[in-house]
Length: 208
Image (cartoon, rainbow, N blue to C red; front, side, top):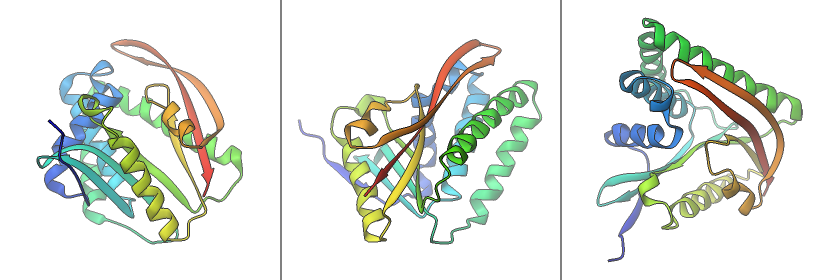
């Protein structure tokens, strides 16, 4: 039976389901205990929402199965509520030993991303902040539809280029398939209580 897929702007009622999608895609449970992994996914989603100017959620029967978040840097957007919720979750991570360890890891990831962008020495007008599809629903063209909706948003707002960060835990080949160019990379080994994980971090861009 054909799935009835719809697309809507983000609503907070979808928050927990989308945070689960984050956990499933980025395998936070492989880095930390379930509770800490949940807080990590909450923190990441609040961080993305706090700087978004465009979000679109894919749904099947009102169930979120994918999301894309973009930031047009020419439009000011400051969401105090999401910022405060992000601070709360960062605090929850800081009060446990495990939380502090994984926070340090993701702080290092942020530094890697910032260095990759700085090394390009280019002033981009926009960023594709976050893009994920529930692994159970991949292969239905949902990712393609969400990606094109972000492209439409950029073009409507006269954005001529944008960038994104990704890594080898994601399907980075998707971006290459749609014409994005890898502009930089950095290899790192993440060490947690659950072991080591080697990851390559990438930055991609495209001219529209």
